[in-house]
Image (tube, rainbow over the protein chains, first blue to last red):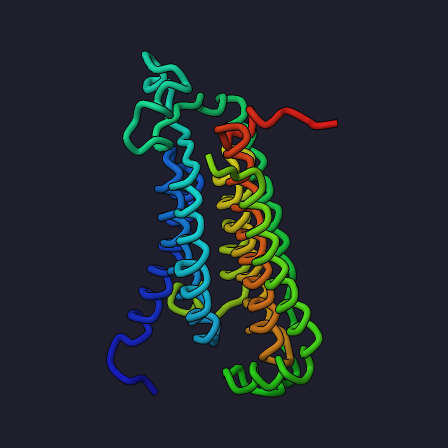
Length: 198
Length: 108
């Protein structure tokens, strides 16, 4: 029973689009030399991850992913970058500019502070380690035979999530609100430390 | 393996999450600034969430547990980002830099 001809192809294409968005965004987030680009990569990757959550039967979580990651985390990181940006630009830009000169000269003061690229050895080591980790995790995931659940209780709906949050998981719910409150107060205190009126 | 039914098999999501974790690990090792490392850490969080949701969708008997777990992960990640960014701002105010190489001073 399909709504129209070629429905499966459309669904598979959308799935691959989201997966590709997720991986591309993440690669941009870790590879780009400007930090602001890597925040954009994180936002793109969050869109892809939200799509995958939708495929995993949880539209609520997809919405939360977009709200929290793109709406809150990325914006906060961008604010922090505007307050203290340091780019990882290449050595070509290092020529003719002292590391501290650009801080005071540039009109957007903290945007261009050159720093040496990570060495080739470090890059190769990082690539090797992450490839090994990827191969190992994929091997474990693929060669194991995962069982199927005998039966499922409850639907994955927002109503069920709300009920479970206030009954089964009420203690964790209260604890995480305390954690968030402490995070708000703590970050205010930390960011204010050492500020003077000068 | 059929490309059309790939989105409804557990292994696809496991491989995607493993790839995401590897990307995050690569960024964590390679990055030289605190904000870059923070972003790589966020990617690692995302891979863990994707793994949990995949297991919840295909293997768990209770459907809403995974959603709530991932919501808690998101809340903790948001709290962590807020704290880490305020620490980064405080560090920048003291050192005028957020490169990890420059932060080599201990007090005491």
